[in-house]
Length: 226
Figure 1 (cartoon, rainbow, N blue to C red):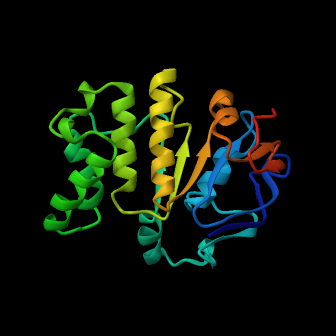
Figure 2: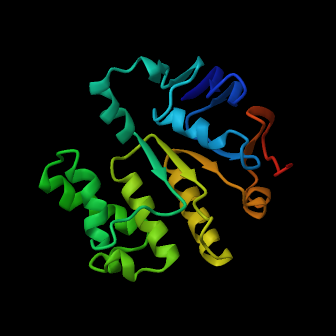
């Protein structure tokens, strides 16, 4: 599904954000990506969603080098890679329904499909009864659920969760994790980038650990070792 082949990202001769990284993520996997600030996790994610280009190496998604994609192919690719952020990135003056629908509207999806798919996504994340609430009226956990619904509305093959519990209390954090497990069980690859040691140590999933731009550990049923 995903393969990093000798991927390096240099911002200058002295700043190497990602240094000769190699790993594979198979279809259906749930993987935690961990490491201290400055380890290279954010740069790695930016390359995976084609916001950054590597200095050298290749990133294959579904056996295709994503850096060989033409500009006109990028929107389709990005719709198949859902991203969840720590700060939610919701439109505060729009309702829950409108926030999720907007992701489809900008892609030119037919209204009939939007009316069918948005309620399905809200039901998946447990917000079917909050569809008319403004996002600014929601709790942190609810906002993150809207963010997840929006990320899933294009039915992505890969879901990247970048510190999805960073602004949440422990109860809401575990509710979001349970939701990510549910999504993964339906066949979506989940890549969880996090600093949350308690979450990583408890989920019993594969853990890729980065430090100083390098992968220093890659273990099944791993723990947060840094």
